[in-house]
Every structure is written in C-alpha cells, then in structure tokens.
Amino acid sequence: MKIAFLTAGGLAPCLSASIGSLINNYNQLVPDAKLLGYLNGYKGLLLGRSINIPNAVKEKAEILYSFGGSPIGNSRVKLTNTEDCVKQGYIKPGENPLEVAANQLVKDGVNIFHTIGGDDTNTIAAQLSVYLKKNGHDLTVVGLPKTVDNDIFPVTQSLGAWTAAEQGAVFFENIANENTTSSRQLIIHEVMGRHCGWLTAYTAQIYHNRLKQRTFLPELLIDQQRWDVDAVYVPELEINFNDECERLIKLMDEKDSINIFLSEGAGMRTIMKEKESSGEEVIRDAFGHVALDTLNPGQWFAKQFASRLEADKTLVQKSGYFARSAVPNAQDLKLIMKSGALATQMAVEGKSGVVGLDEENKDELSLIDFDRIKGGKPFNTDQDWFHDLLDEIDQPKRLKKH
View: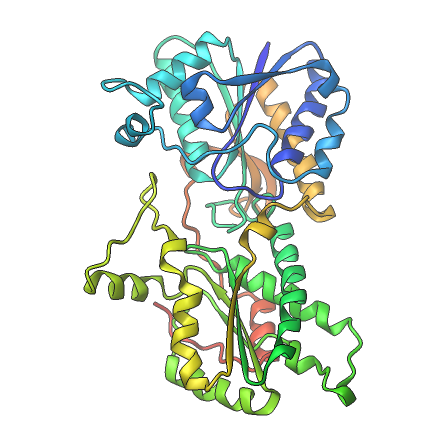
C-alpha cells in the first residue's frame, strides 16, 4: 500500500502536526505501508516532485507536533485553472491539469491520498478521485480541513484556527505597548479573514480576556483601558463610520489611545470600488481571490479614522504571518490527533471525504462527504461570547448587516 500526503494553500498551525498524526496512526494500522509527500502542494503533484518518507521519520513522527509550517511545503495552485497552470510552467499547452495530476498519482502507485487544506484543496482532491474511478483506478481521498479563517462549510472548527487566534493575541500584547510612544495614538491590528470575521473576533476576545489576568499600575498611567480593545470590525457587519467616529473620539479624549481589531476583509467592497473608480487594477490570484495585500485595508481604515480622531500617530500592524506559522497549541493538537486517527481509519476502510467537526451532526467528529464541503462560511455574529465582548468594550452590537 502506498499513501501520499499533500498540504496546500496558506499556512496554518496544524500542517506539520497533521502529517505527524497521520504517520503515527499508519504506524499502527499498516506499518509496512510506503509513505510519500508531494512537495509544495499541487505544484509538486503536477511536476512529479515528491519525497519518500523513510523509517527514520516514521519512528520520530511526534517531532512534527512541535513545528509550524509544513515540512513538504505549500503552494496556491488551482487544477481547474488551466491557463494559470500553463503560465506557471506546471503543465504544457494543451494538457489538462486534472489529468496530469491523476496520471502522476497512478504512476506513483498511490492508493490513499491525504490532502490538508481548505475547501479548494479538498474539493480538487475529490475531483481527482472521481476522475480516476472513471478511468478504472481506485483512489481513496481523505482530507483534513485547514484554514485560520475558520470558514469551511459545514466544519465547526478548522484545524489551526484556535492557535492562530491565540497567537494573534500574543502578537498584539507587544504591539499594544506602542501606545506609550506618543499621545493620541491610533493602533490598528489587521487580522486575516477575507470573508469571515471569526479570527478577528476570537483574537480580540482572547486578547481582552488575557488582559483581565494582568496586574496594571494606573497610578503610573499603565491602565487596562488604555491597553484594551476599543473596536472589532468584521466583514459580516457594516460599520456606521460617523457613529463610530463619535464613539472613538470620546475614548481617545479619555484614554489617549485607540486599539482597533480589523478583519482584512472588512470594508473590502468599498476599497475595491474606490480603486476601480480611480482606474486602478484590482489584482487577483489564480483562485480569483482579491490580493488583499495590494488593497491594504488597515492603511485605508487608518486614513479614514486618523483625521477624524485627531491622532498624533497612527500604527497599522498585521499579525497574519506570525499567527499562521505557529506551533499548534494544546487545544488544536488534541483535535489534530483525533482527526488524524479517524482519517486513517476511514482511509484504510476505503471511505473518502473530509474529517472534521460536523456542525450539521451535533459537532461530532465525522467523515463529511466532499459534496458538502465549500468555502465562504461567514462568522456567526449572534454568538454569546461575541455579544459579551462587544458589551464589555461598549461597541454597539446592533450594527446593520450587509
């Protein structure tokens, strides 16, 4: 039996640990199986680049639990975007990337294929499985849901998202000290989340709760309010700019600083319209996603707020790479190990799908059919913990939805 692993898309604090969990479980289930990893995601599969996983690794797979990133590398390649695959040199003109990838799996003699990624990664793997079966080859595909955005239907909690939120809070604990470098300082913490505000909201909640555990010295101006969250802006809720300015001006006058947690997708439509109306090109990747680093939402919001708040200094900081590259925390690692155990069991039994907490099955860890997997799940802003956070920072929670 030959088993292949592939990680794709952006990093998340689960990739190395997930591979370690899969290897350890296969050591118990099929110790003689041959293991390989495709290098740099679907790019490696198209180019036939892989690495055999030797016994020396199988014997020490738990080391992977203590590393972030992915040992076999990632890439953003969409197998259904033939034009881009040709442009990047992954296939020749006239070739079908799905067919090239399928033929490589057959050539390598792969029986079980594990993909660790978001909705695109796993649905493409499902298409490969269907294609191969139509051509007389059986391939069991079992995916694991990875995204720091936590935006995969119907997965309750994607791997690595808890850790990313915790690390974003740790990141801002240092950045918040910058409020001492000037009077009337505006600090914007830009957090990943193209269409889903879960990571921003959960990061803000963790940071806010961690502050409660600290001892402050208000007699020397080290006051909790000055370090605390003042606003949380997510794509799911519309911002009443004028009302927010009035609220934040009062806070700025009171505590001499403002801390905003901003989802990178908040206000994206407005920024895009502004760029397009001025004749600027909105750059997109192979998946059709807007390149958010070219929009610079944090800088855009800083520009909007700075003059109204009469800020003496404005600082925009992004926690994305810091947070997504971390080692999984205990909470994530527990879910990763449970997911790896079920994924290997299902694969050996010849059952394909994505292993995850199924919100339509009482949040049970289950094998979810590929047909039910899709991206773009919004953050549910009606959760008690989010309402409590907004209440505690005095931000209106009845914001108008898009």
